[in-house]
Image 1 (cartoon, rainbow, N blue to C red):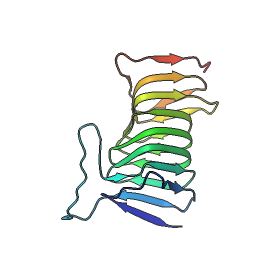
Image 2: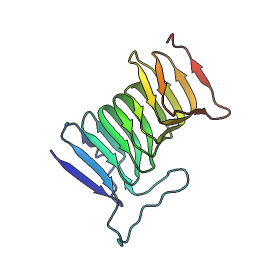
Image 3: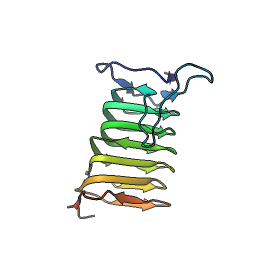
Image 4: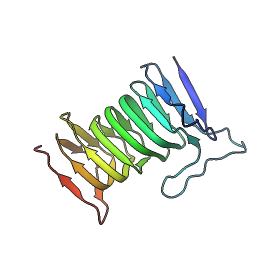
Length: 180
């Protein structure tokens, strides 16, 4: 257990998940050295081609994105920290523990399920697919912007603190059936 640096230009096979399951595990998605041939492409929406990891399973430790990460299939987070300091993408994400932090955008295009764990930092969480907020654990957003398309909030409280802006995109629904 220690530090694993994944440099831009790396693509994991679809059948090989990245598993982060130790408190001493530190996975860093990083740029190549200055002057290297491959440089990450990032567009205005945070889409990137730097490091492609189709499946991520995180129960502990840190995943630190210093450049940009493209998670093309699924991210399952039950613990640990996802620190997003470079604009990054996921397809489907389930967060039932751990926390999202950092200074950049984390954009999910598919189904995002949030049942536990805070969102902190000066970056943003962008859900362009569906966002389901469920489970009895209280959720919090601190100093982080949230942009959402279709939202279904079925349980628990959400505490917003600091400089939080929650934007609902036009033409989508925000359905609340929670008692909180």
